[in-house]
Amino acid sequence: MAHELTSTPPTAALASPCDSSVGWWRDAVIYQVYVRSFADSDGDGIGDLRGARERLAHVAGLGADAVWLTPFYASPQADGGYDVADYRAVDPVFGDLADADDLVRAAHALGLRVIVDIVPNHTSARHPWFEAALAGVGRDRYVFRPGRGPGGAEPPNDWESVFGGPAWTRVEDGTWYLHLFAPEQPDLNWKNAQVRAEFDSVLRFWLDLGVDGFRIDVAHGMVKAEGLPDIGHGQQAKLIGTQRLPFFDQDGVHEIHRHWRRLLESYGPDRIGVAEAWAPTPERLALYVRPDELHQAFNFQFLNCAWDAAALRSVVEESLRATASVGAPTTWVLSNHDVVRHTTRYGAGDPVTGLRRARAAALLMLALPGSVYVYQGEELGLPEVTDLPDELRQDPAFLRGDGQDGLRDGCRVPLPWSAEGPSYGFGPAGAWLPQPPEWAGLSVAAQTGDPASTLELYRAALRVRRDHPALGAGEAVEWLDAPEGVLAFRRRAEAGGVLVALNTTDADVTVELPVTGAPLLTSEPGAGATADLPRAARQDGHGTGTGVAADPPGPRAAEPSARGLRDNGGSGTLGLVLPSPAGEFDPDAPGAGPGAGSTPGVLVPAESCVWWAI
Image (cartoon, rainbow, N blue to C red; front, top):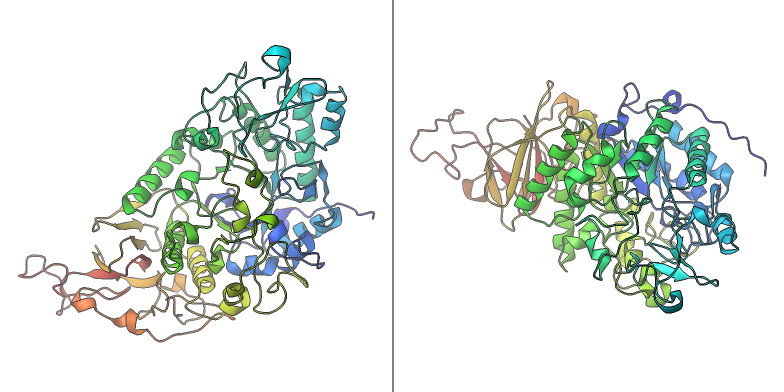
């Protein structure tokens, strides 16, 4: 169908608080939509753009500033759409170009910016360019090489595919082509001027449609070391992100990103590029976000960090130091479509422990300076689905050895929106991957209005983060002394500060505070607020069971729970300061100290996080 592709400038359509200033991304909350698993509008069991558009109100209501969509381009779907056959067309399984245009407009009307995936390291093997290359036309657009050994029967070097097996496939004339991922994803040759010009054109096509930026898949790829040298040993997928490899994180990629930065800025200051870049150190990662390169890079060191206070502090410090050195914001992310959901990673086999730690980690992440990425379903506390039947899995690494674990399907199971229906509201029929029956109780409908739910915790946290001047914005944290296993830091702003305490231990801990204040939020389910909130952190004049105000349909005031009021033997009260009996604190008084009832302190329950207004 004919469709006129015009777009309203995002700055005119958006209603987000960050509209008025350049650099909206510096402390934004960006919600990742894995399109195939977000919402299905036509009953084929696969999520699509129309379904995503119809559910955007959930993202806006959650408190996100932008939405990032995984690839929806024309593709044989050998790797979930990351094998692109036509970068300017929408795959029919996801809709058509009109649906993409409608989604961008709808998002802007809700105050959401739109970031789309771009896949520049490789195309689909069914891209017209590669089909021509197999026929001997335009082969220089890809990486073809003669083989080694008698008759060229061995691959050109020892590189391995990230998905397992050799990174080379032989074609009929005896030459080999490079594919760092599946054989259906041949690598492009970025020395070729046609490749560079083509991607300029593709970026402009989507910018003209109105998108606000690009998440660049494998932004550390594209450029390979001269001579394509051997690595010297196997299991190379395990080396990604731990050391520089001749096919990843080569210095030449930065010239590409500098060029793209100039292209983005030609559309105004609000269009951004986000690097999916695996680098061995925070310092190497920071190179991707220098002032003339991309705007953000995913912080995989934080995602991969263990549930350990010292390790978390080290990653936070290193990340902030590295990005500050180039004047860029840090990003924080706990889950995405390629890794085991953090609810399961943190649980070590215990789903109750995993959810408790995941809730606490979310509050830690949302309190840090910089931008935050939320993967669809983490706001519901969804666990990884680990028991999918082998015959239903679609991760290309599942059938190959020595690469990724091949189990990425477990974090891609379609979302539950309601407690009923063949796919719990995902669509009018079933889903492309089966959802566990217990997900009915984790659905958006089931959690909405429940003050102890993870969904209401995220809604509350994002609201406070948006309203409180000391959360999200800024570039640094002020670490405070805390017991072993506890992180405590202060964030300052002219209109008021915030103290954050994360307890990674399995025992309740009382943390001394340098000042008194009012509780804002705790990850502990059912812990009630017992003090007034600062005006900046209130919206309806009431507290919720999570200790923060909520707009309808969320809960209104809730009475403090027994756990919220307990004094743990006199050592502290959850979210509350315990002043001295006389209202003053004399540090030299006999018995002064934790547990004596005279030292200001906050009770931080086991494996939880507390926000405190100061």
